[in-house]
Image (cartoon, rainbow, N blue to C red; front, top):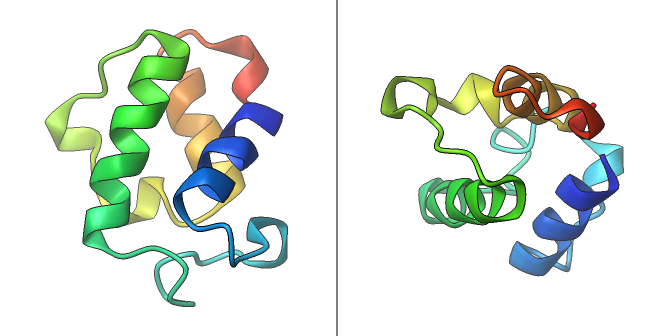
Length: 78
């Protein structure tokens, strides 16, 4: 989970992502940030996230991102 937090901090350092359960609804991430986040996660974990998986509900919280990444066999994402 620390790697995901570090990626999020790199994208939007002004927010504390541990304090939100709805990054998009709270205005922490916009659509451009999601593209950047997907690219960074793919690079960090050496995975390719399917286009159909790139939906707001998979990127709205640390838990949601961790579950998504774990679906690709990454055990330290949760």
